[in-house]
Amino acid sequence: MSASTSSADLLQKLNAIVGKPHVLTDDHSTRRYRKGHRTGEGKVLAVVRPGTLLEQWQVLQAVVAADCIVIMQAANTGLTGGSTPDGNDYDRDIVLMNTMRLQGIQVINKGEQVVCLPGATLDRLEQTLAPLEREPHSVIGSSCIGASVLGGVCNNSGGALVRRGPAYTELTLYAQVQDDGSLSLINHLGIALGDTPEEILTRLEQGKYSPADIVNDPSRKASDPRYAEDVRDVDAQTPARFNADPSRLYEASGSAGKLCIFAVRLDTFPKEASTVFYIGTNDPDELTAVRRYLLTELPRLPIAGEYIHRTAYDIGEQYGKDTFLLIDRFGTAKVPSAFAMKSRVDGFFERFGWRGVTDRVIQTVMNRLPSHLPARMREWRDRFEHHLLLRVSNDTAQATREYLSQQFEGSQQGAYFECDAEEGRKAFLHRFAIAGAAIRYRESHPDSVEDIVALDIALRRNDKEWVEQLPDEMEKDIVHKLYYGHFLCHVFHQDYIVKKGVVPLDMEHRMWKLLDERQAEYPAEHNVGHLYIAKPALAGFYRELDPTNTFNPGIGHTSRRKWWSVCCGGQHD
Image 1: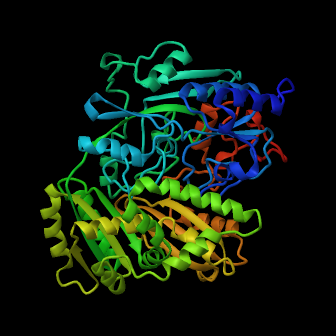
Image 2: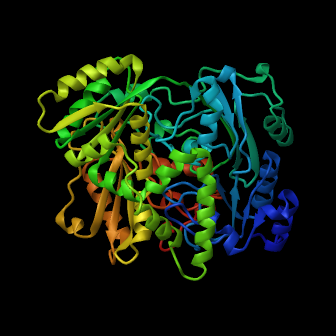
């Protein structure tokens, strides 16, 4: 905080801009914003919730002038702690700006593109596009419920949809702190909106622009133009996608909160009728053969191919049941508010030192309910260790059906069945529910579980040895290993539930060494957050975007200090 601006002065200014109810300062009211979904937590001077784009700009002006750190946050659904503080060892006060009041979505170019404001969620975007028979980059099963569109772009989120690749755009409206400390609003949205920040932001939010104001420049992309070609190259010795890929870092895309984003412009995609096949095997080589055929021989790429290991299936069935049932019965729209209520209740009990109360109560109820999964899925679970959920567009369903019949004819290790509509829907919903099941397991077993080590890795496209083999000295420290992920892209989520007394960070570093030996890239799609070390190209990108280190300092284990200064004998803090 500069000498000319005290904390009280700044808070007074923020109250005047957004209204006192939207400036949160006490520990209880800020908890759900400053505590990560899975990891990360720290103190903040305030959480500010602007209600208009102009308020967002004015808040940013005040905070930058006060020489505070800015952490931009939307839904706070990330898994690596990248949208919250991480500890309390920062050199400046932190103002966390939550943008979830800014949920505008504008459909342009006859539905082929959209403009999304900072709080627009993937779920709401999916609903907006449904009447147009179109879809966003990610849909349920490939994204976190309540997750924001901008969060996906900023974090290189990839998702399950094989043809679409990482969330990416070169059409953005953002604010940047320049190397002289000045604040600039940069309109690369491809829409003529005026000259001043006030005019640009007000016209955009109110949709006061015409088709003639929209520039459709073919050299400026609103989605990843080459991923389909990349993923088909199954003999390449590099991953198809990963977070630090320099070719997919561009302004907002991959920025990880190092800019203040006001809007992104994205492509949409035609919705297609599809068929789901459920494959099980005890021989990983059979799934390798399926993957290589589908990516190289099928006339069109599959829509999705999701892998589930039997242990992940089991943990997800038991500890992800409430998420599954909530979405199944009430739809996705109710989920964010349910999670917010859970967070408030947890915050109340944590004041008395009682952690995980809601998780244990909910799990007690869930344990009394029968299985919610279709009978054929349960049968396949008993027969097979490895499961693949395969969704293809109907124009390739017959070719897929013929191939699978030939592939598994006479197989002693594997089989498949063709899902009806309900089985297919529930199979992919189960895969989604697995993603949060490890957290519930941890909270339900505090006496035997220390924590979770959650890795998000991309294997080489030509890697046929994709089943991990851990040394005995690591196996003994793990309660359960959950393997699941986007199999056709060779992107895997690996959650290790670590035994009580084991240091999770030490376990994670040992895992990194094994991944380096396998020439894997990590993280693949969830951004480095405060868990992973940003590789030189990625760290350089952050520094280029944010030369004063005002936004989200410390991301990827970089410096937390202003101007990226170093301490402790020349090492980044």
